[in-house]
Image 1: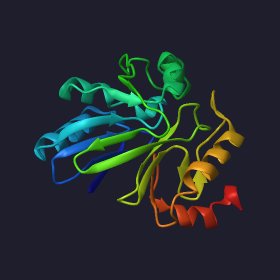
Image 2: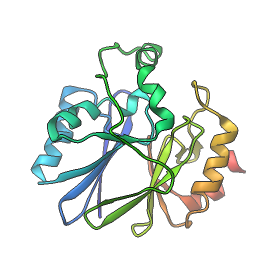
Image 3: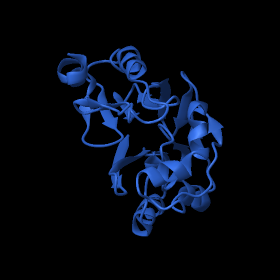
Length: 213
């Protein structure tokens, strides 16, 4: 399995494109904001002869959605996310204004397929298991590839930190519980690919993350 990481938009969101030798792929958090960023993501898919099977979102905060519309339009795919965050799509103008973005920066989006805890998403020879990890947002989810020993945690768990819970819908105690029950129960060697910042591992976070000491 190949993981291509892009860092997009002024809030430095990690977009992940996962592919394998079959040419099928999944995109997690298409966050490309500037026109050249959108072209970079689109042309990576085209230049590598990839077929997008899943367009996934860990949660539906605006900064993780900037590139979703462009990918949907170019490749005829639909976003997949958890229903718990659907309200955030209607709340997009307020989110954008809160962080100083124009309200024309995100097109009207909708969830094409609802994902829930335990769902298995297949593409090529890969399988991603959906883990519900609410707390940063009510509908936050992670994607776990057991065979490749990695998990894509969105804004739930970071390298030596956790997602903020002071935004509407956030819940600190719920997030701490989600991480303990759904992420820290994974094998310690599992590589964590977060929504922002560098990768880490479950073992490292269990031992050193200051929110769990």
